[in-house]
Structure formats: structure tokens, C-alpha cells
Length: 255
Length: 331
Image: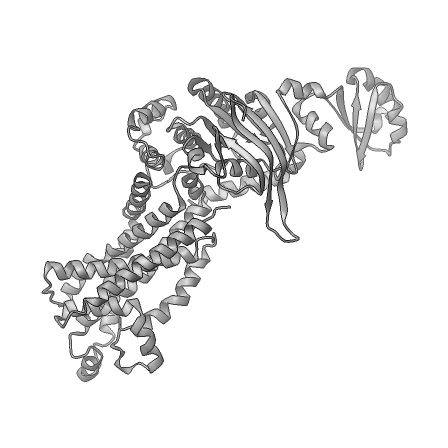
């Protein structure tokens, strides 16, 4: 099982680095996010920006939320890679070896989560270039990355579970469109939740993107760290891993 | 299970779907494939050949019946079966982002092989791929890709290799090369090969034994010469410019049977040489638009058994070939 997992996991990672276009987009996308979204408030009155960013530098405020929401697309790409393997027959090649469906799921979920984290150092460098100062301790860096990794695993697992029996290219995109906007805007990733209506605040209060954004934001802005959120994110990852494993073992099909 | 059988199939049925529109892809199939043989499943598209391979390799669940491969039950010991089989697909399936050696590495990982590299080197040399081992397989020719796919199937020293229409969509020279490879692999590595095909000449050239499959059922089984021996006499096909009378044709000397589809007539005769003169006299030479004679072959066996030719499925074959090529292009 370890051998099969290692092979499939490394395949996911190696394929990312062998596709120049994917690498280019991975590097450029964070810069574009910060440049375009961050600059959209450039001419806004300082009081407005300060109000949204709760009195902090808006880019520093935005960065952890941006990283958190980008983990949603990680899940979509993970399930697209699985569907590509099904359509081009590679999934059959894998399944006609002593590799269990659960291991295939695990390698895909962890592979896409790892791929998603490639953006992290790039984003940090980009934010530094835009003037954000980072004064985190090694433990805080680890906790921040760990939280994002948990979030990515959770979303990867969710997408893989939802698309386990699908061979349709469109399914991951449709699922992504369906869940991305509610999860992104009903979270504190981009704005503080103080102006949300009560029903959105209720969603935000249980939204893992909010946990990840608030955890990262506390590290970057140097405010009180809600360590419990790391536990919530770990539970989110483990819970969806277990569900995804079970669903894949039952429903991952090429026939 | 027979002690010398590589594959045993007992009353295996496979149904897709469960409602009124369900399809019975395999209908109580029975097969016993001896170890060390090249066994062919011959039949038109949609006959159930690929479905049987899917069932035996664990890709599809069987609906009823029992099957063992390499001594293990395909339902309850699927992982053990999959550790002992190799697979060569109709379309070449490789990871195009990887080199030949990396594809072998991944296969070794999936088969949980520890000391795989000497075996991989041997296979790369055997298939004349050693010089290109570190090149991306996307740059390989179709023949090289097929060779690598067979090398992947052999890496873990399987006891059975499944080859699902291995030469579909290939040009004639590459197909001939593949035949030599399949025959060589069988002799060199002593592996049992289960091969599906709808190419009559391929089954005839490669297989020790053949099962003819049609509409999900095995309708005949034996060595190529045994199967051809079932057909008594020759087949004359005739296209006439004028309407012909079946009773009159059947009354000609040596004619066993006369059937028609429009103006196309198929006559089963004891000896074509003996019947042709009287046939041409009866029809009138000027009325014959086309006439051909066929000696006993696997094609005439299929015709004899089903009333159809395997080649009647030709348009569908072209569609499959088209889709196989489209997949290649999309990569």
C-alpha cells in the first residue's frame, strides 16, 4: 500500500512540475490576485479600507484569506486530474494492479493538496514585494501551512468524493461553481464578518475557510491566535478524508 | 479449477443496468484457458470480449457465475489476481509526461516491486527501447509506445497477460510487428496470453485456441484447425444483376444452402470448383456482377454459426478507430 501511494503521490507532484503552463499560472496567479484585488481599494477613502481590514494593512489582512480561498481550486484540479485519468484510460492501468481505490483517492487528495501549497511561498514573496512584513515564529509558520494543508485536503477529498463516479469533464467545474462562491463570500477570507447578515454570519461561523483565514490572519497581523481553529481544520480534513476514502472505495469506477 | 488452467470461467453473466433498458453483455460464458497458451476471443464489436476482460481483471463486477485467474477468485481475491496479471489496452495508455523508464518505475511502484530495475533494463533491451529509455514517451512512435506498454505488462512477471484488441487502429506493418512481439513474448517469458480481436487473420496467426463470441455468448471453441474443420465445404458469394430463384440455386449440384440479402447471395457448397460451372450457367455469366469463393476459414466459421460476417461490423470498427485516434490527438 505504501509503495502504490508513493508512486501515485509522486506522479501527481512530478506532473505539475513538468507542465510549464501550469507552473507559470501557479506563479503568476498570486501576484495577479494581490495586484488586482489588492489595488481595487487603492483610491478608496482610508477610513473605508481601515474599516474593512479592521484597522490593519489591507494586503496583510487579505493574504491569509486569499490563500485559503485558493485551496478551493486545489480540490477542483484534483478531481479534474482524476477524471482525466479515467477518460484516457490511465485509471484502468492503475486499477489493473494491486492498488486499492482508497489508496488512489489518498494519493490524489494529498497530491493535489501538496500542489496547492506550492502557491504559499510564492504568495509570501509576492506580498513581501507589495510591502507586507512577516514576523512569524517557526511554529506559527508551520501552523499556518498546516491549517492550509488541512483545508486543501478537506476540499480535495470533498471534490473527489463528489466526482468519484463521474467521467464528465464538466462535473468538477459545476461543483466548484456551486460551492466556491457561497463558501468564499460567506467567510471572513476577504472581509471581516461584522457587516454580514445574521444568516451569513451563521455560515461563516462554521465555514472552514473562515477558520483558516482567521488563523493565518492572526499570525500575519500579530493578534491573538485562535489555536482551536487549527483543531477544527484538522477535524475537517480527517472527516472528509474518511468520507472520501469510503465513497471512493465504493464508487470510484471506470466502467 | 483445473490444475493446469490459467483462467476458469463458469457460467459468467454480466448485465449493465438494472432497468428495462439493461444490457446483457455476457450470457453464461464458460471457458477454460490452459496455462502457457495464447488464447483468442474472436468476435465482432459489441460481442462481449472487452467486457469479459473487464470482469476477469476486476475492473467490472460480474453479475453471476464464477471466475478464477491464476488460481484466485476474481470477486473475492481481486488484489491477488491483479498482482499476477498484465494488461495491454486497445489504445496505448501511458503517462505521456513521463519517460519510458519513469513509466516502468510507476508500474513497479503500483505492483509493489522492490528490485525492479534489472528486469526493466532487460525488457527495455528486449523491446529495443534502451536507447530511448529516458525520453518522454510522448515523443515515441505508436509502435514504440505499444512495445513499452507490453514491457509494463511484463515487468512484474505475471502469469497471465490480457491483450484487449492490441492491434486496433495500427497500420499493417506495425500490426505485423506486434504479432511477432506477442509470439516472441509468449515463447520467451512463458506467459499465458488472453487476446481479444476481431481480426480473423490475427486470431489465426497467433492463437493456440480460440473462442468465438457473439452477443455475449461463446458459440464455438477450439484450435483454429478444429474450428475450420467444423465448416464442411466452401462459400460462394454472388451479386446478380437479375433476380434469382433460391429453389433453383439449391437444386444445383453440390449446393447445400442458398441465402440472400437483396441481390447478394451466399451459397454453401461441397466444392466450389465443382459447383461454379453449373452456377454460372444457371445465372448467366452476363448477369454476374460479382462472384467470390472462400475456402474454410475462421470467417466462414463465424458466418456458419451466426449467418453474419465479423466484417459486417466494419463501420463500427472505424468509429472505434476514430475515437482511439482522437484520444491520441487530445494528449
